[in-house]
Amino acid sequence: MTIPDLGGIFTMMWLWILIPVVIFYIVGILLAIWVYKDAQKRDMNATVWLLIVLLTGCLGCIIYLVVRD
Image (spheres, rainbow, N blue to C red):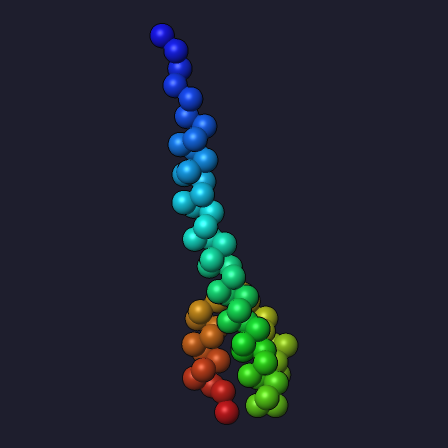
């Protein structure tokens, strides 16, 4: 009796986990960049808003959209 090779199955499982995580981080970074540029155009403290969005994600972006000038 031989042990089946499960390497391919575990590789596929990691890909199914890794791809959404990478997409989540890319979207978060793109949101933070957009908020930073928009805050600069509106003469707001862009660095603070960048950090808020990077730390809180979509929630920070929603807060920014509510309080922006």
